[in-house]
Length: 132
Length: 351
Image (cartoon, rainbow over all chains, first blue to last red):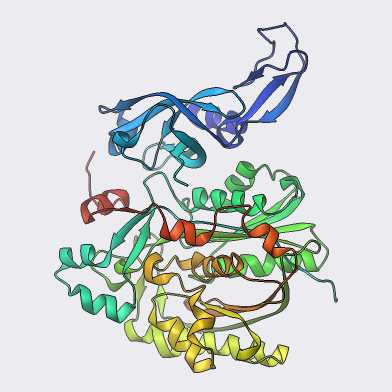
């Protein structure tokens, strides 16, 4: 049951990529923090992260954890979004061989993992190479 | 009640994976040219393992929101029609509403009526706006369709979603008339706990698809006092390529009126997303003043018909989101039957 509640608590970030922007210095935190580590301010504005970015770096998982075995090989990388925020995510809908650093990606809502055959379905953001 | 209600935003989403008829036919010893000719269909879309009705609905709705300037929190109802809701018990609508930021002041229900569930969602969402109960209503048709291995349906059952936001202002297309036609006709069904639907073969044609599409189309033409030549475009439910062309001809429509929204030859049958996706492809290219007739069909059986009239605001909205034909015709990834079987969880693993 623990994973159900934890996943639910993280909906704002996993579903909508909601971040916290410091009202004083403007630094953006994802996930949100209570205290800005730049200026010590405690007041934040809720902002939604950008839906596009570029691949800063990535690695290919060829020996996956049990929940992800059917997806191997798959890539996980750090995406720098157009608003300057960098965050870690899976890169999907591609052959890992077609990926390169600096490649433009967009964010899509995807199924991230499932809790076995009978548990909850967990959704969130993933990166998809921009092919336009 | 003469309030004008219609579409303020629309969007689509189609997965990039495709499988060709030849690839399926060679596994089952079937004659691919016969299937391609019989179904008028060459390939179909396949959802990735991390895609389902919910993820397709979210992406289609994000595109719909790009085409209108509204706050998702003002959406008062969300109705998703699908034969493949990921949960047996737990709504798809709550997840989609949460993902687009439309919670908590919103009504939701997941609809099921075979391939007509999407147009049902559209009908109810638009009706609530017309009644003044909500400001915006969201109707979605989405499916990751099921077809049993080796069955004729396996060649066509595909995946995609279309999303429509209804309002009473800033309309891209006004809904002028609606008409529904329904009887109890058991042409196609799926019992509880069954993976794949059953169908009654040729019985799915004359007493089912054709009777109900004709009933709804003739009903709305009579109700509105219109004739086929009054429409620039017409979209029928597309279980295969042949049926919509044939029913169009029976009603007096020309091929040119049908082709723009006729996606099935390279998309397949997206079940609840079928005619709604055809409508998005038409809205992508329609011009102010163009009239569109859409008639869905869902086994069991029934049809919903809509007459849309495009407004001056449509052209500026068209390119604010990815076009349906771009999803359909660009960057496809062709997969073999082994990969398809893995993606669609047709391989039994005892672990």
